[in-house]
Amino acid sequence: PPLSSTGTPLRVPGELFVLSRKHMEFELNIDGMITLEGEGEVILTSARLVLVNTKSYPMWFAFDIPLALMSQDTFEQPVFGANYLQGTVQPLYGLIPGKATFKIWFMHGGCTKFLGGYRKIMENLQKSMKGQVVSHIDPGSVEKLESAYADPNDPTVIFVNQPPESNQNTHMPVSYTHLRAHETSLHLVCRLLLEKKKTK
Image (cartoon, rainbow, N blue to C red):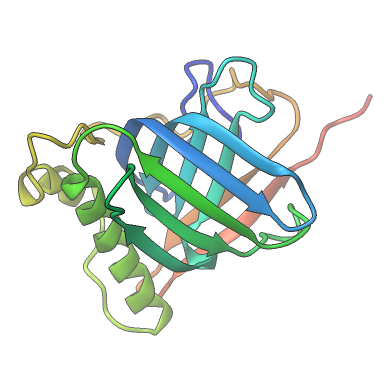
């Protein structure tokens, strides 16, 4: 996904940024590709998990995990080592050659706030995909997560203020691919928005 000059993923119309967690480590195993490793920030929105790689001289800057295409997600708490979230995500419109498995390690602090927000978003998504009525997610409900899942040991940050929806100063200013998301009364729709590079 495109990033702003500050390294924040661009928010698209209808998408809400919910949580941000820094000092994370992640690993991606994509069918038909090499394993990608990184460290940095994980951002949870109403439609996706975004892994932002802040490692020095990275092979890749960011990776989208659309929540609607995710499966087999579990939170593991090993006796030795950091807690981690893992799962599988299907390719979106063939942008990667095959499905990807991921692991996201929480290297510092607790996880109560992050997991509370994550499970709330996933619960709403699963209900909407079944045609069930869901509680509306808006900036006000995002702010309430701070008190609902209070944990002084969890460094997760709640997005009290939403980032702007557009920013032309990106790492890929001319041509990029990103996920656009919006909610309806029945379901959450994830679709691909392709911006083709103009040639003169």
